[in-house]
Length: 55
Image (cartoon, rainbow, N blue to C red; front, side, top):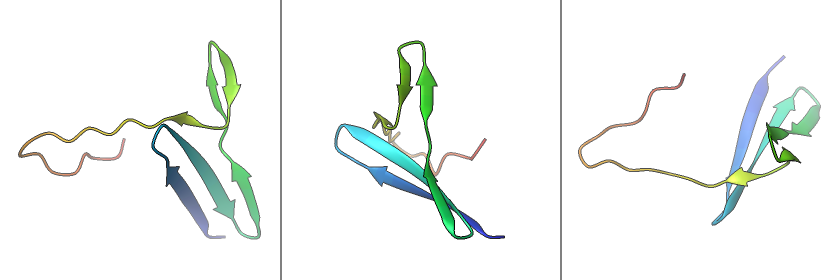
């Protein structure tokens, strides 16, 4: 079964969703403040650096 991760980068918040076969779900983020369906958008670009490796 194929899977895909979709990322909606918004100006302030971003949302992640997973598609597996015929079903989809929104990724729920958990923090001390509770559960949320969006997370803060934070991108960083360093001069002279390439893509960051996935971990």
